Length: 309
Image (cartoon, rainbow, N blue to C red; front, side):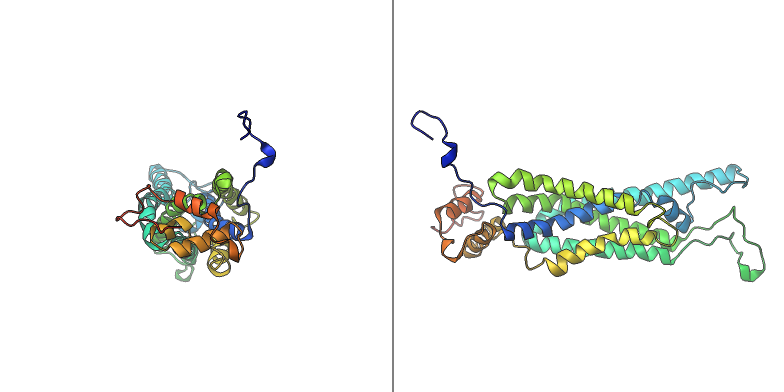
């Protein structure tokens, strides 16, 4: 600031840009955001094929008589399908409520990797439901029994419904965890001038995942009777990317390391995120940024003061 109070723009410098370490850590975290978006929309466009496979049709084929019992059955089908879709929110409530506690105990990085494993397990459980399709025959009938197929009657696949319910609960827990920890992690690793940009990337990646799930679930693509399970398995590539390829590039949050008393690890990690070279780990800018991560001037919870830098 000049003597007359004006800001000299030419003299300003911005510390810590999009360094390779920051980009890789951000990419790894946003893989969780992509999986969050995929799970939020993967039951929409392939719904008709999925419901037919579960034995939960929303309407009867043309030419089938619709009496009171049939209308009651169709209404029950709608209620069951609504439960399968919406139970994700119940899982998300559990996941979001417990995510901060677990991330504080395990670390942000470990939480994201475990959460991606939960996404993968949920996808595999949901895809397994396709192995138990509903019978297109009335109860007690089968081709081997010599009775003709009744296109107006289906029996529910209880096993498939239960597997899909379990899958939705597990994916909901993972989604709830992502909504809490991914923005937290991005805010803690990004420099102040990029915090808003990287924070908004969470939502941008999430809606991209929703769009991708909607497109993949179209009947000409993966939304058919024999391919809808692939829509649920679409979370496996980003999960594998994060767990197998980016796990070593996904750096721990310097703030979490600092609050755990690991001052040297916090300095080294922050230096990597800011693109500092070996001799620049002790710069005043890094010390100032680390000091700003402390919860209060008195130091960390538990009475421990930060190391003198």
